[in-house]
Length: 426
Length: 147
Image (cartoon, rainbow over all chains, first blue to last red; front, side, top):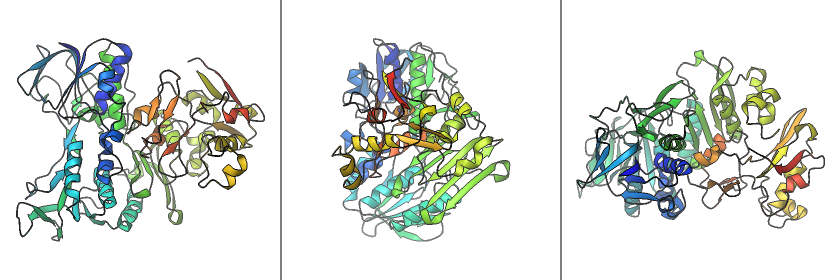
């Protein structure tokens, strides 16, 4: 019997353990993780591939984090089934763990489309440490790679492979890369730097078929694009995105939509069962609805809220929104909220583009409230704007100044500053 | 814990806070050498915010529930439970800029190398932080603040 059982040891699981221990120093905690290793930062797997980080650097908490928090870890183990009536989690070896409070933090699994030849040796996904390790093991012998997906994961692995001297072709189904977070202008700025680094970008296409090498058909030798072109390659990396891992709750009373449905306390509809992170649909304060937002910082925060509530200290999840900071290929970018509206006419859009200095700033407003921003290169005041978004602040009085390079906290009128920013600078 | 309080009404916008922060975080700790010989020049961790006639200096607030700590991808940003400081470990920092995205005060910068971030450490080795000690008009005050 464990007072708290957490399935998943990544961002949400770590956050939950920290929050539980703040409230309850002694209640037993069991963390179940399929991965055979201690905690680490999944967003850093690209740094492992590039050679910039080793596993020690990837650990996002102190050494012996679990031991220091008195957590029983079941690593390399799979939770196979939930029994919510008798309150236990059945494990892969026929054993089980009873719980008083359960957190489902199983995260996401890579979305893998059906592609002919995907079973060949040299095809990888890119989500976990072991994915990264398998790729690293093949890198020495490889010369060229096809990356399927021009989103955040695709761009991050592409940069890592370029740093290792590989020739990369990035294939993106949409007309522009990073289309979920960037408008065509910002996207083009990124495409330019990526191309400059020697990467071929094929947009509006995907991989139709993976073919073998002439000497060994079961080993990747090339990728045939939907446009008909055949790109020779030694590796194919599928980096399209993640979908919630909901196997554990399927067939149970836990309500799901695209992810597990939770309230602002991160509770599911079943009492004593919580969910957080990429598997859960949490609140988006810009859209005003719950949805999937598979982002590390949000997962960690959701985990903290769940942990606190599990341990008996009420905490509300304030919500998150689409928010990405990009460092890839030396072009810093921050995109928050509705940065690329589908229908521009429904919003007021302020834009400043200085191609010579590679600066781009875009503010999306609705009724004088900022609902989205994109900042390219000049990113340091993003947090001030993020805070205005989060608080739904009316920016009418200073909205033209949002585009100024001098925009800063001092631009925000004092009355609003006092209201919105936790008066510590007073 | 002791924190830096900004007295906006006393700030003249002279920028000496930035100068002395730069010097304090330089190798030489010498104003001439730090400005003329250290390349890249160390980044000031305090920022003089100017929107005339308003000006004030702002640096990391060492928030109780710090958004940068929760958002940090690598664990470089930590809350020291004993001192209350929000600490930044440049060796662990991967320069992902996520902390910059969530800092309500815009108090985290990319450092001179452009590879990691840099922010106020409250000059832990000094009795009084350099920006406070060198503010000519008492616009920065270092004192115990209750939460």
